[in-house]
Length: 131
Image 1 (cartoon, helix red, strand yellow):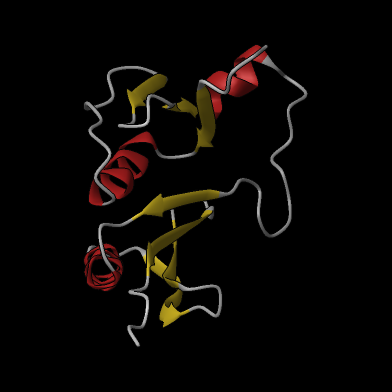
Image 2 (cartoon, rainbow, N blue to C red):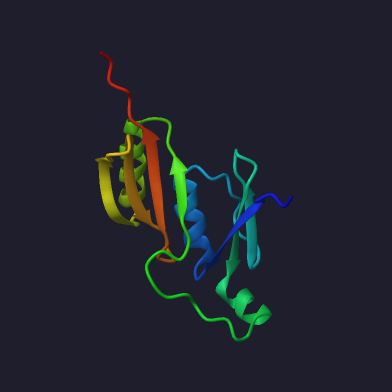
């Protein structure tokens, strides 16, 4: 049975993508060519390909249009870490889609936008109320 091993992102600006994802804790090396990947703690690889490389490999490739082209969600260590991570990303000059809030499904949630307009979710479980 196949196993999900990697998630790929086509990027217009490799250096800005690396800068963004480092703010989320991804241990990624500096880019040296048109492809880059990093193995996440879960074992899944996150990969980036420069737009120029994709167009070279697939000359008729068209950039997707619409709201959520991919869905990425990063689990934070605590609700406070969601707030701190969101603030760190925004302070670094990246955009926020939605600031931190307590979601009805029991998580602290926030959304930031990577350099290629992909919405990236940040979340952590909220403490369960004690009786």
